[in-house]
Figure 1 (spheres, one colour):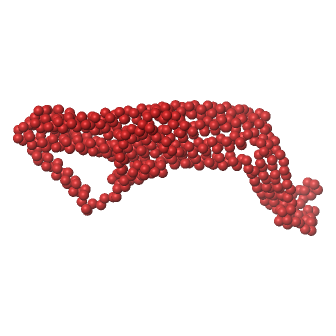
Figure 2 (figure 1 turned 90 degrees about the horizontal axis):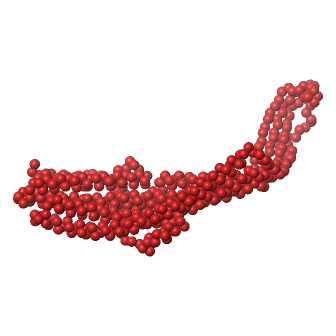
Figure 3 (figure 1 turned 135 degrees about the vertical axis):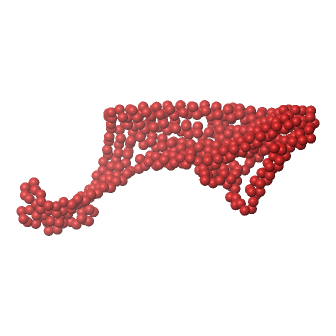
Length: 462
């Protein structure tokens, strides 16, 4: 097949796709373009970790409300109504009696703890600390989600940049293929060069296709993190690009020990771990209260009412001339009771002892977790600092590499056109230029991410 015919077919195919895409008869859905801040807000609103964290805070709040309530007196009401009738043996006579009666009873009692062996105080202290820990954990979860969104956003941004580089690289190959085709027709180059270039163009087209698919995949993953409607077309959403930032910030990120100190002082998750240790200590005191006596004060009001419809024995009506009605009985036949109660479990089958042992083990676990988190923060901060410094060095190297590779490619292109360089030489310089540009943009995006990561690691984004 004639190479010119093949080229015309490719160009015609591209033009047809463009005409179809731009046809006024096609209805296109409006594209929502997400900026970084909007993406973060959407992620924070929809993230599973945030929704569950909010539930945890509510649960800890309910536990705190219960702990406060133990200092207040309770109030309980109980009442009953009983109907009885028929024949029965009056044992005091003894004679058979026939009766029909209604009995009423109610009580109103209140009890307040005077001394609970420090259980209530320790439980309240632990509940307050648990509530604060849950709130800090939720805030830290929000920071983690935000950082994850930023990372995914920058990944999509990187994919777009790499896609442009691949498109530019393919443009070089397509243009050179057209030049080689023309030079082959006039006999200045051999068909071998043309076949090699066609193979290179094909590889570059495949690389471009892979770059497009990588962008598509990362957009899918990002939209999944935002928990947007999965039924919508991918073309419904797009993401704005941030200005590239390849500058060092020595005043903020250049002192490793300062960054570590900032992280240990500011990290919300570490503060939450510390609160967990304190809460575990109060839980020990809570369970140790089982060794001590409990004292409570109780007040109560009680009432009994009884009303007979009839009462016969020995064949005669035995009811008095008049009975107090039920309303009178319930309002006047009241008696009260007040007292102080003391209880003390001298031996509770080791129930208290086992609770104390478990609480001490949980305290030890909390202390271990706190120390491990300290070490993890130090490790993460130092690693991020090293990555930041490394990215700065890579950017400097990549900048020089892009300049050098660009000049080498231009020079080799000219030499190849003049016939003083081989096809392998020119393709090698093209690949070097492609690699240099990819390394440059990857280093820049990586530096932008490391700056954001350091901000979150040292707590400066709170």
